[in-house]
Length: 378
Ligand SMILES: Nc1nc2c(ncn2[C@@H]2O[C@H](COP(=O)(O)OP(=O)(O)OP(=O)(O)O)[C@@H](O)[C@H]2O)c(=O)[nH]1
Ligand SMILES: [Mg+2]
Image 1 (tube, rainbow, N blue to C red):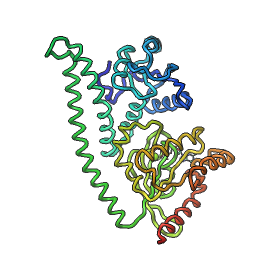
Image 2: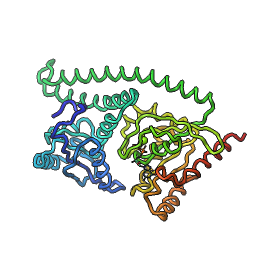
Image 3: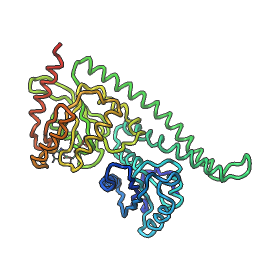
Image 4: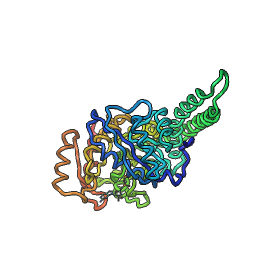
């Protein structure tokens, strides 16, 4: 069993994973598309999914997520396909992770951990790196506590320590120290960020934010709006982890600032939301949110729901927003009309755009001009 799954390099066996999931009768969604997304996430880490184990259950087994029988079956299956990694599509309690790992003799991850690993790979700025490391430490500490307790139970006599306890304890204490250290460093960066926000407010440039599901086209849209070709936009998940702000000139000649930031996903781990709170604060402080959706994605409406819920979670639920149906160049016109109608029931303004061919962008700029003219009226 790996004691430190935080290690960046994957060994040969952990490049092959088996996905384990529960099909719960209480769930109001289909499990397969979620597993497809998890496979895509794993692909971003260079891990290939070589099989799926789906168990019908009303709730996860308290001890090891899958039922014990299914876990034993998983052990045989992993051995037969040469997989050294099991990835559960759900959140694992530290004890469940340890037990499942022990039964299957595989390293065990959950969905939250996979997302954190991708963030870890993508982090470029010092702030993003510190934020991801903080989330990983916060995730790992309870697991080590659980292992430490399990080891001390194996220890036997009164006053004696179990064989592995001290090692886990030492590692845990090291992570706790690191967590404090990171928090201090992040405070300094945050103060700097607050100062630049205050300066922008003094300069009276209104700030609006792009928010949306990962890969929906936020950065491409900011490139188009600002003309800054150096902004990175790529066909992969979580390419942006830092907040980038660019000036955008509206038809009236007014300049506004547009912020691009980290994308959302289903079940974005809470430790990541907490760690990235400062980055996401830009969204909460903005005058308007441009909620970007990939209109060509088969689960576009579902991603809309995820994004609105996440905006609520980060405290941006009350910020005014409009919805941009992006990538309209990839879909049929009637599908865009239908999507627009569905979303218009919940939102005031829904505009179709394409960041790639530029259609709809002029209407968006005109809308923004009107929005700020209205804002200025007493
Ligand atoms: N066809 C088409 N592709 C688009 C459009 N907008 C973006 N894309 C593509 O979608 C992919 C993701 O674009 P990004 O701008 O990086 O998406 P993002 O929302 O910033 O993604 P994250 O930073 O990962 O959250 C890239 O391959 C873009 O070229 C569009 O309007 N039409
Ligand atoms: Mg981006």
